[in-house]
Image (cartoon, rainbow, N blue to C red; front, top):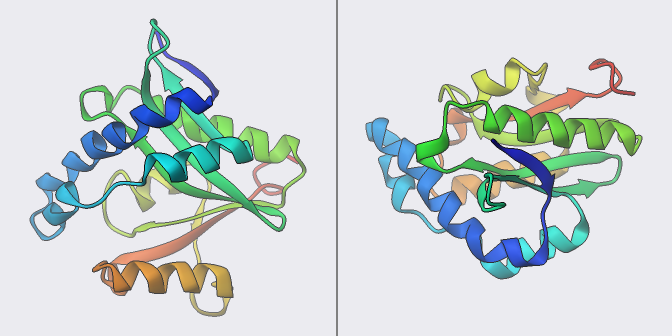
Length: 176
């Protein structure tokens, strides 16, 4: 059984290992396999995101984290920084449950949208988010904040033509 709950400070220590495990899925995509060995978000950064109140944990029956979603509020938007589920727990609806919780929370808080950046063609990236109603932003729809994030990702080796910014307008999603 999996429970989705707000993250607690003591959860921060477990999150880099979950991110590392989730990243192993990229080994199945030869041109992105290098991501499996990439850097993870630091425990300190996780602590900051948890303290800000926009991080949720998927916990097993013993309350051990097996997945997480970390986000931050930027103006009237919740921005998803990371959504990771341990490799051995993927495909069980845990990522879906985490995303549903974050979207519901954003709606309850009266936020206008949820945004993120991701890979366009990786099955568990943009195609996954489209199922929730997220849309890929193109051209002038990409605001300065998202353009800056995409630029930072390109500096870290992620090809801009493979990445995209996505947005879920909460009024359209019926959550507001």
